[in-house]
Figure 1: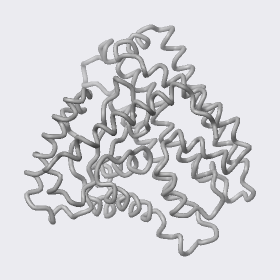
Figure 2: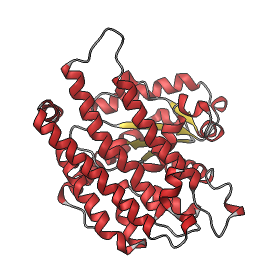
Figure 3: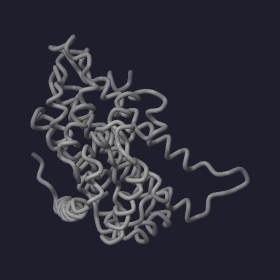
Length: 336
């Protein structure tokens, strides 16, 4: 296994310390007694255990009960989120994004029923499902979190009984790639300005920072998972995938050489480049944005980000080259 560097280890320790405190605070909330089948998890930098002092906290709430089975659901949601906002403020987290737009309780059966439908995207089910599987840390309701994860993973294995010797999780791989493409499209959408208006320099800088993070952390969330899934020999089982969901994206990368020893240099190259990203994002927001206001520094950082993308692609190609049967080539399923 590739050794963790000092920056990554520091981020892990910081994340775990804050998450432990947040778990304790949530565990004291009496209003959660009104949600006996609720699971709460952190995503984003805390879900990846990569947070620093300037990281915000992304929280998701998934209930195993159907919406109609919870008494006074909206009233109790308001009570819960008011307490959660107070806890986040007291712990010094930045404000929740978009005026707390994403503080909502989702329901597991809605997520499962709408998998792949137009509603999947519209109601945020798709994002919640992907982040649950790819970069989450449970904060409350461990049993509910585990059962929800197992049921969602199981939804990708409906065809397994008919392909017990040759099963590949192509449906899941497609969903992960779809998530990556969706994030790229969302980025482009946010670049759109109203007719007759132009981006201010401040808006350009913030957009460039988002682009930079997209090229590193979001890409890693998706393609560390793709690499880990591709490193298994067929058949890939539900147990294999559930084991991967318990790992951070970094740990998934580190696990690849355990199955394919020849990929160790490629994994090392990816993690080495990623350390530079962690170093940069450890700066205060103003300091990071200053780098993107400087043309030369910005060019250097985006060149580095492209190098990171090259390293990740080299790893996927290395995994692809280990296939002993042409029909199990990883890149074949990622492209078509």
